[in-house]
Length: 107
Picture 1: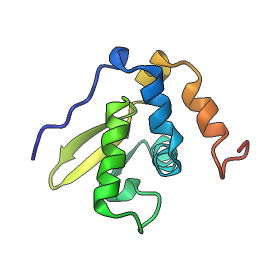
Picture 2 (picture 1 turned 45 degrees about the horizontal axis):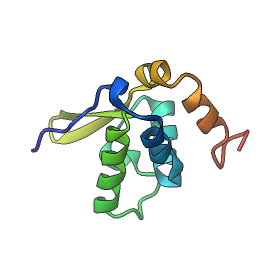
Picture 3 (picture 1 turned 30 degrees about the vertical axis):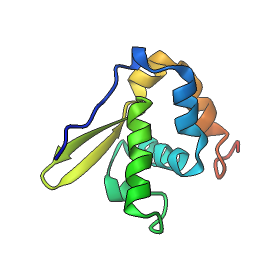
């Protein structure tokens, strides 16, 4: 298994964070992680119809933007939302995006 890269949030630019949150599938994944705190790769998918390669790419983009951390637990890869760190780097951004996401009370 190749080692996964998790950036320091101080090195993540705002445009990369916004790009990661702009896709509805990735936003759904972040919302699920926000609600549950951690999910396996399969459990992070917003629907079962997303191909594995597409899911892998979404997770890679979320990692690159500093939104998630992925760790191996046995045979599974577990994703965790880096909420506290992300909120410290971009105060209020995640709350605003999640509150206005399609399917949310404000969106």
